[in-house]
Figure 1: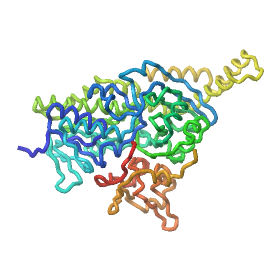
Figure 2: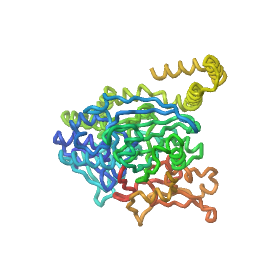
Figure 3: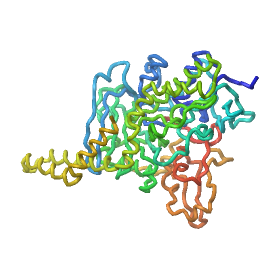
Figure 4: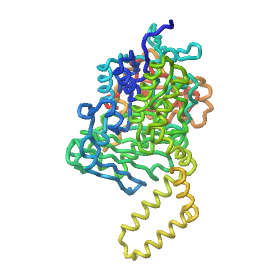
Length: 433
Length: 94
């Protein structure tokens, strides 16, 4: 019989790997999770907003116990240029009651806690170990090689939850090289402020309630990206993510861009007097549905960022990671029942993802990355028009209102042309339908 | 808020520096000499790469690396591996 150390090897203790490990350990599977950091979460970064639902399904009422920051009661969206921002959003008491919709979190805290739960459920967790390559025998993945002495480990199935770089899927030929238009570089600062400062500045009652602000528009000078401000208990997370190709072409250092955003007159007062606690950077897979690699082969499945499962429109990632980790684990359980770990059997993982919100959501926006790549002015010219129109309408300067509306209509016509406007509306409707 | 220099920001990050081994490199340093844009010098959020005009080479300050991997997406000549197990960046917040 073939050598076997574990039933399943999970590579990476982020949300995808931990979710897979939890489901497997609970089902009595002999599972090891290998993490390269000092502890789970020590290498992990997100914006970060964490959605409750997929996690609650795994560990009911986890939010009563897990280290979370604030539950989000208000989500704002800003279109911003160099001097102004146009704001809209939703604040609702429906998100201010248990079990809550989403939370601000710190991944170094949350993942560490989640990992503890997974270990309590019976999984083995090994930190400070890098998986260097998959071990392939007769065309099947049978284990992994690590950077530890005598570090080869064998199992029936390897679940690669090794993050956006995903060296394992790449080395197996499941995905191509990551190209600069498919990923964004995100940089973030955690800025310490007092509880009262945050409550006052963001208009919430106490340190349990939180606010998010997503910011896009002409301030990015035509680069495709998004800035954000999220409230934590005694700090705010402020960051910006921009497609790497745009950073390259615009000759823009990500940290310089973040400093410019921090100094913007709409943002500076929110963080004034703050004390930077940490600076972070990470890649975000933003290629969407069309960039998803093949997610399974003999004895092998890919989950989370490693499979490019990020919904950049709704800034969701960790929930897709958790769902995919769960589904990979459930696929393994079926395969074990059948005693078959072949590619054909593991293709059920793909089917499960297709049936879940993960691929349904990503498929819905599948044409968006290409659309925005092609029609970059959708991110600059239209937001600029909206900002200018709002400034004009709210400026009282003796011009009668009918005159103002007539000027705006002329402006719309001269900037875009009615035909182009209609075309753009049609294109967006068609691609997003 | 006072503008922070990148050096000051990196000082806030916890690292376990591997003094024996650099996980970053350039596969063909000759290419750097004729590389027009030298994108590694500005895409990196931690400014790990700087051009040494006198020595005509890219200096790599690998112990400041935050392991995002942007450099390896931007340039095919950068050899990028994970630091050895347990080494490298260790975030307090994440």
